[in-house]
Length: 125
Image 1 (cartoon, rainbow, N blue to C red):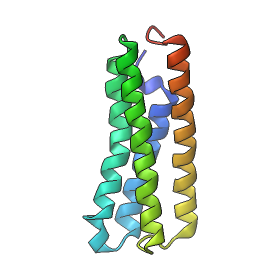
Image 2: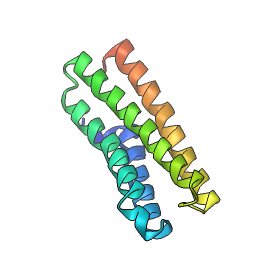
Image 3: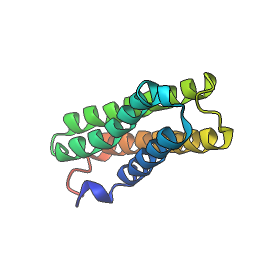
């Protein structure tokens, strides 16, 4: 099996694309290299740590550690998104809500996946 078969990886990939497009199309130029850069890095960290953790899945504790990094990076991404909206750098409320919901669902799925690894250590699947 490949990490590409994990639902959380697909959702993270979709979030990377959504946030990339949001930062390029909807933020003021000064935010592109400030908060825009930070939010792009944090969501890419979600996806990358899923891949790296999956590569270490034979070692349960390492797998869980990377999944906790994934969850923390997702939370960081939500915080950056909220900051952009609260400072009016992102003015499109519909887009904000859509991405916020996307990240919230991803966070819940990551939590469920962590619990599944803790209970069943799914390294062989």
